[in-house]
Length: 196
Image 1 (cartoon, rainbow, N blue to C red):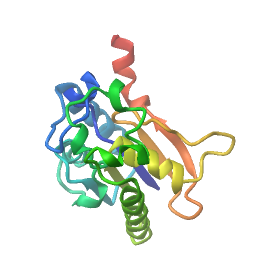
Image 2: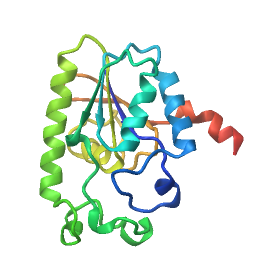
Image 3: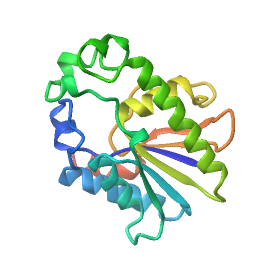
Image 4: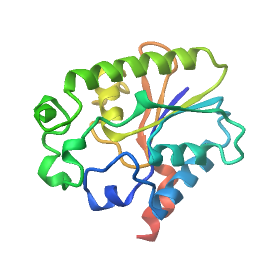
């Protein structure tokens, strides 16, 4: 199984602003990551692939609290480069930061982002096929969305997800056609919903 994970919540996510690479998890995001780690503790993860951005590395570390699961920190799993939009509210930019309209704003060009996502998916599937057991992939919202749209087979009868909440879990069959078994699940965050 391949477990696709969006990192836990940051202060920037909560405030709904475009972030920089060094943004850490908030206290709440750290709790979400621990909940996710507890949920996956019994699945027998063999390897964790993580974006090298701080918030993703913190989330990945929570999946291996004793340090016994190897974690590969990879630049290819980074969020789409949105340097030209850093600090801007989502409401001002979310209508175009996923797509080619963002190219003129000092952001990673759409074609380059799509090419990078294709390369990272090839890498993920090669790693998954080389391990006898599940692999976790910790990355970012736009990367998850691009994977769902261009590389994964939706659960029969469902449309591909176009939004992944923080600390959500997507289960993917580890062989072609890469069918999604469970999409954007947050059952491990149920305590959070009950306390609100």
